[in-house]
Length: 212
Ligand SMILES: N[C@@H](CCC(=O)N[C@@H](CS)C(=O)NCC(=O)O)C(=O)O
Image (tube, rainbow, N blue to C red; front, top):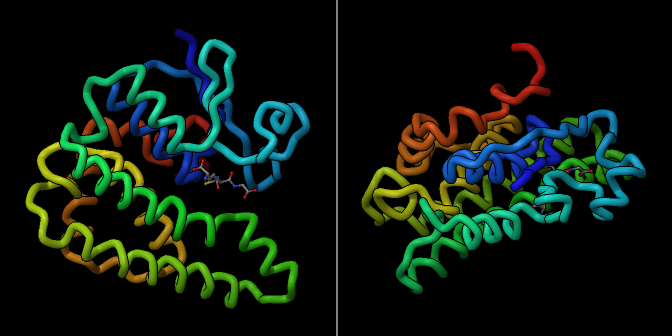
């Protein structure tokens, strides 16, 4: 199977997919699109993904879009190791945690929304303040969902979709100076980043990353 990931090193949505590809031991080729130059809006890419967003995953030429749909595909096609628990209640809780970030935080602070605010006259400080407020409110709502759970990952001993989505969002939080000082979230982050699946998935490890 030939896997080609349309990606950008700093994209948190692409980072989610990179983590799951690594966790499942899958080899893939990177096709980077530099969001700073709007490469994601180039006609040949938009022909593949009309949303003009990264990531997209080409599977033997078939184009999959939306990071969570891509991850669900990978989970169904390559179930081992899983990113969703076997227990159906826990599966729904893991998905809910991931969606709370992927639907209710990330889209409100993504690049095109921030650019729209800038275009409507907000200065950069006000735009960054918007992102910070959105992320802080979102994380404050997510933290209690896993506060009382045991284990080094969000939902126990094994990495799940919840961790895959949380870690990039914490990186975004730091980028905008949002508060991240939730002891459980920070402990999960430290544990997750030490996992081999994250080593190759982090932004700095990507072929298109800016030199440090
Ligand atoms: N819901 C989408 C979000 C994708 C997304 O927002 N990608 C960002 C990078 S993290 C992007 O391509 N932004 C370019 C833009 O906003 O024009 C997913 O999960 O795949």
